[in-house]
Image (cartoon, rainbow, N blue to C red):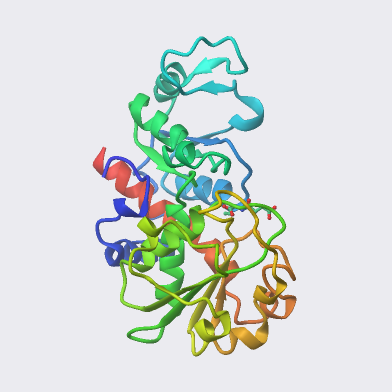
Length: 312
Ligand code: SN0
C-alpha cells in the first residue's frame, strides 16, 4: 500500500484491526520506525480528533509532525489545468504538492465535500491533486466522499466490544441543522461490507446514500423496526445525496433516544449535536462508546502510518 485513500486500501480488515489492538497495548513499541522522517498534516477544514489523534499516532511512531491549516493560512490553491489564474486562487496544486513533498515523507489531507456540486465532490480534486503531484504517500483524513481513518477506528471499537459471532449493527440517520457530508456514513458502510454482521441502514425517504456505496446493504425506512434487537447503533447525520447537499427535513422523531437504543451500544464519530442527533440520556449513559471510538482513532492512524512506513 502506497496511499491510504479509502476503505478499499485495507487488504485485510481483520488483520489491520488485530494489529491496531496490539499497538494499543504498547503504543511506543515502534518508536524508531519513523525516526528521521516527517509527516505533514494539511487541514482545509476544522478538526479536533483527527488532528490530535493523527499527530499522536505519528509521534508514537517517532515521526516529526508539521501541521498546517490550509483553509485559513495557506494560499488558495488552483486545481484545474490550463486556467488563467486571474481570480481568487494564488498557487497551483502542481507546485504546492511538489514543494510539500520536499519537506514531508508522508502527507495527510482533510478536505470536506463542498456539497454544492456532486461531480466536483466525487472527483476528489484536493485528495487526487495531492496523489497526482506529490511524490510521497498520501493519507485521507476525511475527503469529499470518505473518512477511512474513522471507519477503521470504528472497526477496532466494534471488535473490542462485540461478543457475538454475527452482531446486529444499524447505521441510523439523525436530524441536524446543517448540511453534512456523506463521508463518514460512506466509509462506515464500506467497512461493514467487509465483515460478517446483520447490517441495516435506516433513514427517511430522500436520504438514500450513493447506491454505488450501499450496494446490496439492507435499507429499512422504519427506524424503530431497524433498531429492534440491535447490538450496535451508529448514528450520523448526512445531507441528501439525490437532492445533492440539501437538508430535506430535521425530523426530531429520528433523534436517538434510550427507548429506541434498547440494549444496544451507541456509536457516533463526534462532534455530535446533543438532543438533536442523540438525547443526553443516551450520550451520558454507559451504553455510549463515543469516547472509546475517539481513543481508537490513534491506533487506526498508527496502523495506517506503520504500514506506509514499512512499505515505502
Ligand atoms: C463532519 C462530517 O463529515 O459530518 C466531520 C465529522 C468527523 N461533521 C461536521 O462538520 C459537524 C459540524 C457541526 O456543526 O455539527
